[in-house]
Picture (cartoon, rainbow, N blue to C red):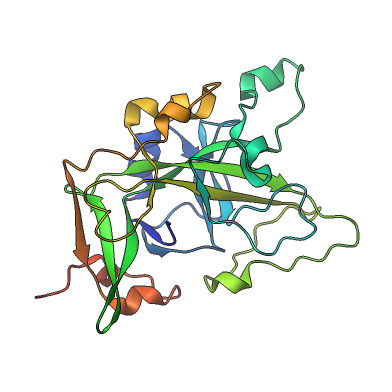
Length: 254
């Protein structure tokens, strides 16, 4: 699975990398070292690929009774079939198509989740040891994700995702609607297989726009090559989602 990740580039580098810009009024982006479920995090959605938006990590299907129990991961093998993910996986119209007036605004779709590393945990005699997985040069990449817009019934109260322990940074619309996302996982590559039996789907840069627009992007949901990736142990301080500083990505001294 993928339960924590990092993104510690500066805002301008992030925007240039994806040719997209932050458009909200929350002050832009600051480097993050412990991104956790329940938090509002940067994503690029298929309906607005020129912007970087903040959605809450933990997908709430549009048909859910309430906004609890968000789904942080979706399996690549079943993402096109599971009711929780099927609608988001199917291609949605682009922003230009929407402007033509032929479609309603999408309430779900595919997205890119920018990251430069993610954490996995390994059982040891002394407990679970966290490892950070990244490219050798710490370059930014995109994880394959899905997003959806959940709208409550009139009687629904906003419960949030406190069960994840990551803290909820509320950024809901006035009508109580909530936009959330999930990260797709696949079989591990040679670097991750010693740490966990699943890994997040990392998209090749040339495939990122295809993921957002293709009618059938299933061929993109394969484990990425491990040729220039690494994994190294980090401090167990990452276990606490309220800790978010550069020390978390420093390798442990042997």
